[in-house]
Length: 378
Image (cartoon, rainbow, N blue to C red; front, side, top):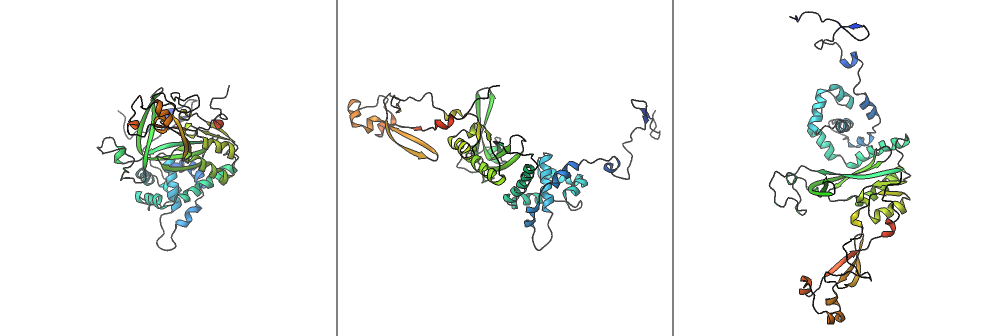
């Protein structure tokens, strides 16, 4: 039987050198980091040495008790994202269990922040201050040639919020009615998530939340600009202001913009080609093409379900879209009504006396012809 007081027997390593077996219960006079020359926090020290926290100086009050250092709070939140900690409670527990980490971030080990301190810091600090810190990092990366900014990519992701309406286990009346804003988060909006569980089988799910838009350097894959909007805001509404801001703020020589089908609109393509003098690498959006089921006469007018050629009734603009209006020839043309006094389909609008109508969107095909939607030949 092995005695607890017996000395550990040496074991032989490959090569013939013997060493004493490590005793995990041995007490050390110094920390393991000092004894074994370990520096697990060195990479974070290097990272935070480049973090310009000078914009946070304006948050300090001129009188009263000194608050918890805002610089330390910011470093701790960056550490939380790097370590993918799920919530602020996990971050507080990490600081309590690791005094060396707390010291490195700038906290006093005996006066650590609580969850409420982090929540108040995030809620009360203006987003422009965080943007200035981020812009300083991007400027340094550009000066170090790590970010070139010649080719940019734009994408977005959905951020569902924790409200009753998103929890399908709860019973909520009009769960996804966009006019009924959730009380748990009045600033969120209704959005959609599209999945493809099987090839060419689209599945749409609704959610309440936000959408985060990121403009990144395509070569280094580092973000240059980001913005969070309600979930009902689409990519085409955000990409142009983000590109303008990045070009003017960092003086970028943009040669190409990469994006998915959400950017396949005439307004975005014209801005990339004419204003930025860059080449768009945009996926084709099939919704922007012509409807193969659309029936048109040889003169270009719409045909109704009865096969009659409808009358052109002018055009109008709806936002950035131009639409052509076509109306029923029976109710709007006396000459045609003499030959065809009744609608063969007895359309409900004809019974009301107004007649049916249809709209056709005017598409700018000239700009789309300049886009190479396919992959370049190998």
